[in-house]
Every structure is written in structure tokens, then in C-alpha cells.
Amino acid sequence: MVALVDRFGRSFPYLRLSLTEACNYRCSYCLPDGYRAEGRARFLELDEIRRLVRGFAALGMTKLRLTGGEPTLRKDLLPIISAVASVPGIRRVAITTNGTHLPRHVGAWREAGLTALNVSLDTLDAERFHAITGHDRFAEVTEGVEMALGLGFDSVKLNAVLLRGRNDDELPAWFDYLRERDVAIRFIELMRTGDNREFFERHHVRAEVIEDQLLAAGWSLRPRPPDAGPAREYAHPGYRGRIGIIAPYSKDFCAGCNRLRVTARGDLRLCLFGDFGIGLRELLQSDDDFDALVARISTQLGLKAAGHGLHQGETGLTPHLASIGG
Image 1 (cartoon, rainbow, N blue to C red):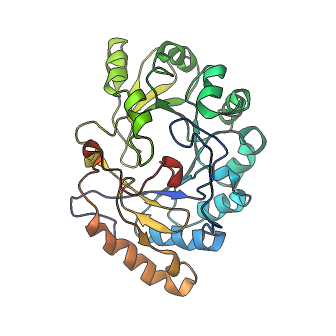
Image 2: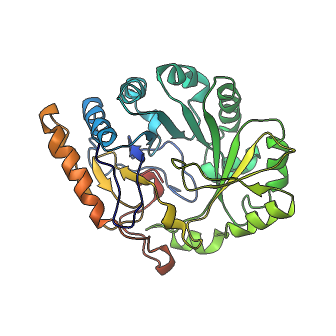
């Protein structure tokens, strides 16, 4: 097997695959005006997805995350999960969702082969939830999380984007939530994208502020597994849950990069904030193109940069995080 290793010695066992650019939320930090389709979108279809995942698995990819937009808007999500979970070499199949469809479908997703679940939950306050997302779905999302905790997932994680003046004062509430729940909350530092400059400048909070509070409260940093995402995870002996910090503006954040991305239209992105995409879709039309697909993926890693340009205000092709799944 040819491993996916770039010129900086980083390996890539982790693929984030967007299934759609559409989202049914209007989050203030991402799509405040809601999703607006540009033309008639044609996102990757089931057979294309299966071929794509086979190609990456042949190069050593073992962990797959299905993202969006909002991936649960795909009517064929169940067969997609089943198909990718059955690809030889795939050991973990995760999904990132806003959670609105959890109560009705999470059990079926688990049976189809989903092994890990990430749910966006920016606050533990129902009114703040409505203000941030544009929807009054807090009860449904939290109900779905409670259901998921009883289904035997390898991990259930919650994602909260840190927002100054909106949710950056909720650490005590999260402590209470985590005391008896085997779940991880990951605080994600707000990132500058192509269309959120004013919002970013008004609401950005450095993740280190939360880390300082954790250390002061007796939480300690855990070792990072090789196929993990970018979070620095903290634990405390008095709590079942964990707290992760995703800090893209921190020093050496990109040194541990272990993931690649493919958009819902089949473009390989070497970096979330890269300024170019590499088309793969033409090689997803037939099983006969498998060798060419593998070759194209493996040869493109030489173009991956050492790090993103966020510190210089460079956001690349990413207009908002729904466009590629964060």
C-alpha cells in the first residue's frame, strides 16, 4: 500500500467528505442569510462516493467523516453510510451534523455502520441557540444527543463555535453537562472566511482564553491519537466528559495536520483554506479509472503547503464553512 505522506512528513489517514453544500440553518457565523444555491447543484452520487472512498482507502485512509453543508439533508444518506462503511480498510465512519434529524434517524445510521457522531451545539441555552442558528430546534437536538449516547458509538462529540458576547461565558454550564455524560464538547475558535470579516472582528475569541480557564479548574491535556482531528483534548477525574479545543490561530496548528478534504462536487482540497482544488470527479465515473484516481490523489500531496494563511488574512477558496464542511 502507498501511504499518503506529504513533503513535510505528515501522513493523512483521515478524509473529510462533503455530501452537500446545502444547509437548513442560518448560523450567524456561517450562513446568516441561509443557503442559496448557485445554479442547479449536482453533488457526488452514491457510486461516485463509493469509488472515491475506495481510492483513498487504497492509499491508507482509515477514517472518513461525512460533512456538508448539512449531510443529513441527503435523502440517500443511509445507503451512503452503508456503502462507505463496507469499503475494505475503513475502520471509522463519522458524521458531523446540526442534529435536527437525530431523533428520527440516528438509530438507523448506527445500524448502517456509522461509528462516530459530531453534533453542532453552540450553546446550552435554548434562547441563545435560536439566536445563533436562526431555528428553535434546541429540544430536538439535545434529545437526539441523549439517544445517541445509548447506541454504542465509539464517540459522541459536540461542536461549539466560540463567539465573543454570544456563548463565551458558558464554561460553568458545560462543566455541569459533562459531569455524568460520556461526551466531548469541542470549542472551536471562530475562523475568518471569505464573507465574514466584520463578524469575525466583532466576535472572535482566542481559544487560549478557554484553555487557561480549564487549567485553572484542574483539567489536564490528554495525548492525541494518531487519527484524531485537530482538537487538544482535556480531561478531569471528576467528570465523565471531555473538553476539546480547536485553535487554528495557535502556533504550529498545521504541523499535526492529518486530513484531506473532498468537496460535494468532487474537488480534492489539500487545505480548508487553500486557494485551489484538484478535480477528481472525471475519474469517479467507472471502476476502470481506479488506478488513475489513486495516482492523481497520491501525486497531488506535493502541492500541500506547510500551513494556512489565516494569520495573514488569507482565506483561500472558502467563502463560508458550509461550502466545504469545516
